[in-house]
Image (cartoon, rainbow, N blue to C red; front, side, top):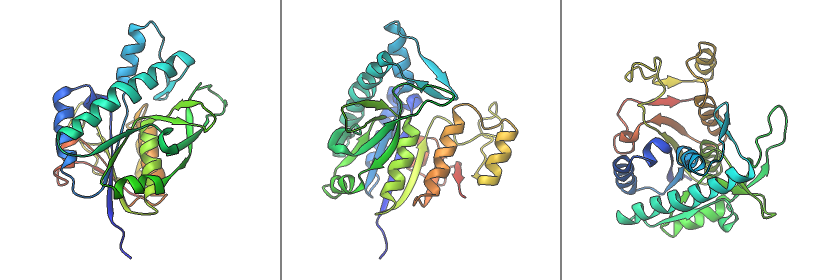
Length: 260
């Protein structure tokens, strides 16, 4: 039987922190007729709050080291201010949204990342996404809005990379739906030349990905994002796109599509 289409979209700080960009995206997202899920980050907002509170922020390969103090800031920022701002924004456009952490309804569980070469602190690696619970929300006409916070079922919350949550949620929902995963950020796609905003690499497969890493074109924070794209494609997700916000209403705009 043909699966129903589902859009899983992830937005980051450059959209979240721009009031007009966020408003425009939420308006367009609310008009998507198929069932949909939104995942958001907010690392820039968390970093700003940490600075105001005198808490040091440390990043390694695009990933945040999460101390006890940083975890408090992450939860306050992601699950509080940002999540509820986004949910209320969607309600404005008559999209019945529900803000969630992984702990809510036990939808996303995680284990603390083991210490190998780096101790990431209270960072969680996703172990399970309860897709049947999420499907229940969707069938009620509710759009889940996930922030980047998970839990271990033992009372411990974790900071988890939002790109990873998007990949894991999309992969789990791919068992039940025909899933398209859309990573939305400020650029038109992955760029061949960061100085040329129109130098979009329109298609990346695994071979091309390896070559782009060797050439230093894909590096730093883009590395985990692209890896999450390929993880999703290897686990039930039909299509993965990286594009700017215009893609949500016009899929013919120039963007990057990924395939195995």
